[in-house]
Image: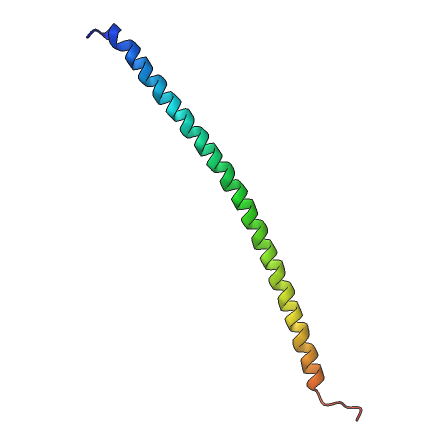
Length: 77
């Protein structure tokens, strides 16, 4: 087989490889977009959980303070 005869098959091979690489690149771009979206959603969820925990702790502290106040003997009696 001559080098000239092998040239079209090599070009076809390179074209096929190039097409596969384009497809892989497209898939990776899509995965990166999904990853960025998930990362943003997880950050939102984390912030929401922090806020809820802080509110819960604040309500718990207020409840404990009110309970302690109610258990103190009155000085007015």
